Length: 438
Image (cartoon, rainbow, N blue to C red; front, side, top):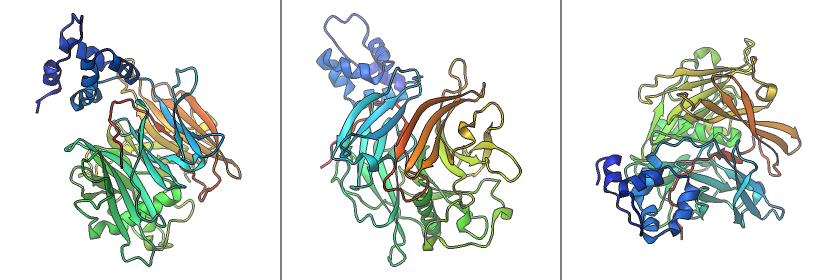
């Protein structure tokens, strides 16, 4: 095992007839190229094709800093409605780019599960089948995951990366009906794990003390389509506070992909006793009612590989119209701190003030030099019956400028809530492999 990325680059050997540059210099150049160019260069010579397929080069490529323009991945039904087209969108590009088509996948029921890719891999769900897919939009590789048990229960699924085994894992939280002996359980699938393509229970189950929080998190997902987010090696689910009669000790439950164990994150400082009323129901009786405080107005997001909580104060009783982004760098200490505040009554257009749903799905840039920090915000506006107008914007923290980079009208024929599932996510280019499943 090599000790550092620099040592790996020095030891990487690649030869090509007529090459005059040192091998390590050629590797440095190749690591700066987009995935599309890497794919084309596989035909240059056999040694290059072999190099690009190694785990070592993929890790180096993932660790090399790049500053690509923000991209979106989104799915759309085809004219036949029996297949799904997957597109990418770039603000600086001339038009949307069709990446590939999924046959035998119902377009109206296809959704992108998480708001951002995990090291370049996306998790898709065909809710009609039902079936999960993993895809790398940069390499156009896609595979359907093995089938799972009955779907007559509320579930929430996320994709994460295990830094120990260098494997991707899909994790499902499953909440049974009131007549089931198992109220809430977990199962996971290791992508390319080398063993049988099966869903299995994790090494550590859900601790008894966290079961009601896990059940509440799944109920929250079922009503408001709030998927888990992946950050710092763990998947995180938001716990709705209105399911409890007092401030819960857990605002977020987490699952470590490496340890395969559950833990919790304490509440932010603005969760106070004044916001609570006697509970209308318990987590075991069903999902929260529409517009339950602390659910529609709050959601999780990963920014700069840190867990963040977005607080939507557009309908605040004190007259504010603000989006707050709180972060917790150390989940063990629960030290929530206010990171950004976006005043929607200032220079921001009504695109963020009117929609029923406003979700922060990530960020681009680091705020240093030319790489200006921009927040990526998605909105959903219910228009008529099953029609929804969806937009994606970039918000420049320095200039407070709002730019719309995508606007589409969607039809949801099987809509169960007023918060439809997402059909787009942030797109990160990588060479992460997609393994075929049995």
